[in-house]
Image 1 (cartoon, helix red, strand yellow):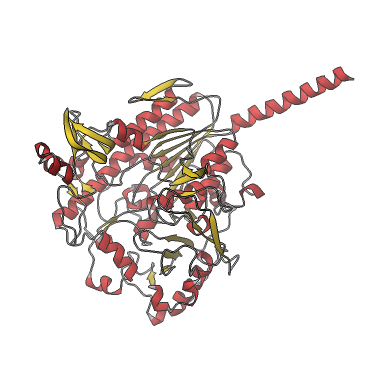
Image 2 (tube, one colour; image 1 turned 60 degrees about the horizontal axis):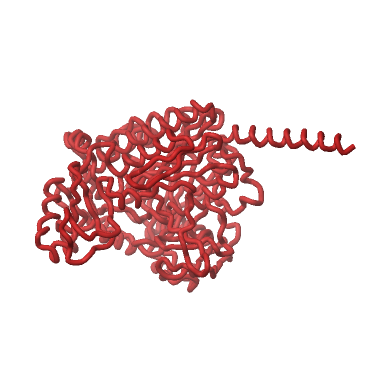
Length: 614
């Protein structure tokens, strides 16, 4: 009997092992590509779907690689972000949760030790047997509490972070964590986290006023690189441009294509794929290459077209040939603009730039997008080649920006507003499984950034409808594409950066937003907006059918009163009353607080349904 039992157990074990191996073989390799500050109208295929014309309404754009991916896969053109700032937007993608559910509203550091914390996306993929790898910008300010201190949890098993490139001084721009000397000449005192541009000859060019003041032998360094690269630095009517101004809106890359920061992300990713179970180096830092026996989840976070906007010379020259329609802020728009949105515009005011400066800003932005498009194509091709050579299934999730970007739209550059140009970020999903994601298909139903985590987790083989994944706020994009997911009548979000607390709700016909909180004091006066006078909510309402550029604020127009009140009630009930969370994280990076305050006066309000009548 014992022998028979052992034979039986051996057979069972063999079958079980075979099932595990088979399941792993069926799990696709996953590549998630994300860009930064990327307007949807920089992509021809998106423009063609949305307007019928390939070019942006501003003018000429190039995107052959993203367009190619769109023909290979399914485009979710009406995808929206939830917070128009890098950190909160990336948190919503990694957590699969709205800001008002996770408690991450802006650039705050936070921890994963609260009763409101759940596993993030790469954490779930590891549980499903994946190896996880990230290269580039991450932008998720997560910490975990160990021995009473908030420490970096290392979200990805292999992490080729942008900070490594900066400290190695390899790319065209970055920060050095510590600078003691320049070209062998010792500084009067060291500088920490000092920004630089690095030219093809290997020279560092720092732009720090105090550095030049303390070390007069380097006076003029910032001016020299400013002139050499034809830079346009960030400035406003209240903060005039200087050679030391922070942020670069235009100029020439100091390095050749491929040797920029984003270029190194691609070459590092390819090195990772080419060095199976072997070490490879990025500068002086060693990394281990891919394990071909495990399914792969890789996230590439490109910096482009975020500032500094520095297209390589050949791209810049090509785009200098094109003229563009320049958006302008009118007195009529400004007069009706809500106070919070005026604050965002003033923070990055560009309406009084010269026409030449505005044109340069637009040309260089779209040139930078064209360069990035080539890098996206190179990354996708390398990933598909690796997967198909290994005879492994694969899926690519391409997200066009963590939010958008203004090019003097509404009189400003930057993001941080619920206006459409800051909020609409199409997704393209390309897969070896053409049944789930048909080639060339376009989905016009709403999708949101909270759909990214459930999409990837479901693709990896998990049942996202099980209790273990009830915390996810989004849907599997495959279900949205097939019509199995609920159809959204609206999308929602809330951002606290720059404008102050502001929530938005958007349907195909109308866009509405309000000030959601009286201040940023977490856990205090959470339901202020419920009873606050309408005027105090600083509302905005736009008729998207007749005013797609969102110029004419109709929030106080009597003809639209019913629309405004219905959208206000729905928005408040969702973001403030349907399991809202605010967390007392703590200050700075010392985020050891775990107290969560909930507001749940309208449970179930977020039902995806909103029918509006004038």
